[in-house]
Amino acid sequence: MKDRLVILGARGSVPVSGKDCCRYGGHTTCFLAELAGQPIVLDAGTGLLRLPDDILARKELPLLLTHPHTDHLLGLPMSAYLKQPDARLTVYGADRGGKGVRAQLNCLMQPPLWPVRIDGFPARVSFRRLPAEGKIGPVTVRSIEGVHPGGVSLIRLESGKKSVVVITDCTLTDAFRPRALAFAKDADLLLIDGQYSEEEWAGKTFYGHNTWNAAAEFGRDCHAKQVRIVHHDPTHTDKVLDAASASLAAVRPNCRFAREGEVIRL
Ligand SMILES: [Zn+2]
Ligand SMILES: [Zn+2]
Image 1: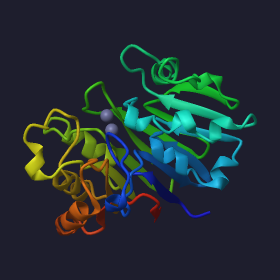
Image 2: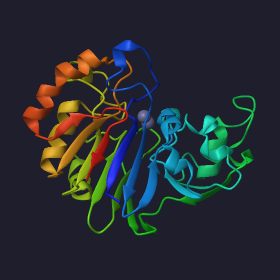
Image 3: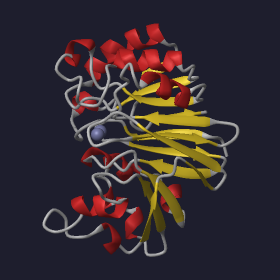
Image 4: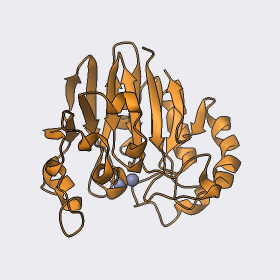
C-alpha cells in the first residue's frame, strides 16, 4: 500500500458549511495518515465523520490528539467507529490542565453536555499518554510541546521511508522556531497552522496560531518536501484562500492550503 495522508478536516476553531467553503471544506481538524500499512488518525475534529469505510472496518485504530480544544474533538461524540462493539480505539494525548486524556474527553462527553461518556460506547476505548518517542506498529511517533494556550503537542510520524509532521495550533515564536524547525526537518509532508493573513495578525498574536506566510516560510526553512497549510479560519471563504494561494507558492513551491478530502501521496 502506498504511503499517504488524507485531509478529513482542515478548518480551525469551529466547523462551517455553505457554498462558499466547498473547496477547502468545513470540517474541523482531522487527518488520516497511512504509513507502512499502519493507519493513524491525528485529531478528532468533525472531519472524523469522514473516516473511510476501510478504516472503519479495522478492528484496532490509534488516535493521536494534539490537544483537547473542542475543534479537535468534536467528531468523537458521533463517531461511527465508536458504535462498533468489536472495534478498539486507543487514544493518545498529553496530560492537560491536570487531567489525563480520558478525563479531558469526558469534560466534553458527559451529561449535561452529551449523554454518552467516551468510555460508554460499544467500542472498547483505551487511553495512553502521548510519548516523546514511541512505536505504533511499524511507525515511530515523536512529540514535543508547542506554544498554544493550554498547551499542544507537535507530532512527527516516521515509517523509516516516509515522514509526516503535524504542527497545528502552535505559534512559531522566535524563541520556539529553531526547536520546531529541527523537529520538522526534511519531512516528506508538513501540515502547519496558518490561520491568519498578515492584516489579521495584529491583535491575534496570543491566540496560538500563525499567519499563512509565516507557516509557508517555516515549510521552506525546514525543507519539507510538501507543505499544506491547515486550521483555516472559519471566516475564510474559498475566495479568500484562493486569492492567498499565489503568495504561498511564491514562498515555497508545493505549499498549498489543505483541502478537505484531499489525498496526499508521500
Ligand atoms: Zn484548533
Ligand atoms: Zn487549540
